[in-house]
Length: 78
Image 1: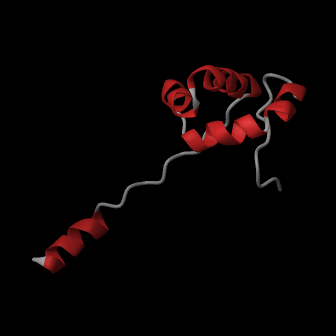
Image 2: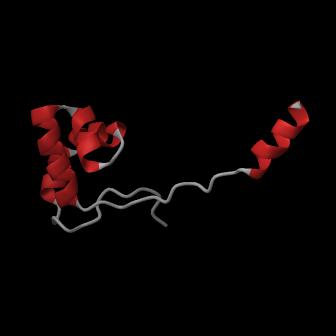
């Protein structure tokens, strides 16, 4: 029975989720919402992770300096 379960689990691999890039304006909207309602509620409202809201709130000053349509602060630049 256990070996059958292992076979089923190994064949049901889920593809990794695709990464999204968000514009500065979207991030600022999420920050503004989070300031009024909290990080968790903002994350649900904008369909993002709560950790993203926390990170964006830390970077708020930098986000306000860039062009609103820029896909800013993306990591792993070549």
